[in-house]
Length: 191
Image (cartoon, rainbow, N blue to C red; front, side, top):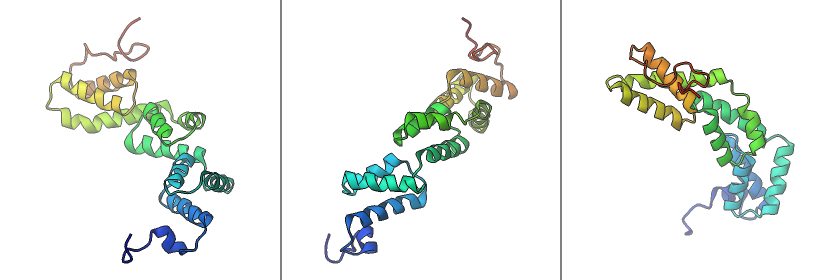
């Protein structure tokens, strides 16, 4: 950093004589300004900024006590936003929460709030939006692309087959020989 360069935002806001705790608190508040974050994300950010682990843990505990850091609320909010906005299934949401450092039990509780019917409707909406782009393709290619899209969003094979089959049938495609014909698991495969 040269003399002409401005100091980092933390020093600029708090002055050069700011103590580590004030800087760490400013980092946490700055991180929480844009959106909620998991405790793990905040801890990682503090570590990257050189905040001692003991100080970071103490501040994070205090932020939890006053309700500024709440992994359960974060997980519920994340699941709601990503399931509604991106159409992600529980499996994909679970992976995202794990990457965010949310405890598995906390993530499971948030994921249990996703209604299976809402999940199927989200898959249906994704297929309907994408159906226009695969309309000119042959049926098998359309099935692969639509099913692959749903699989990448975390939907189980049974849901993929069922939704793709039903939506292609509604568009007038011949689907008699496709999986997802109403068998108990929705895959069209018998025991």
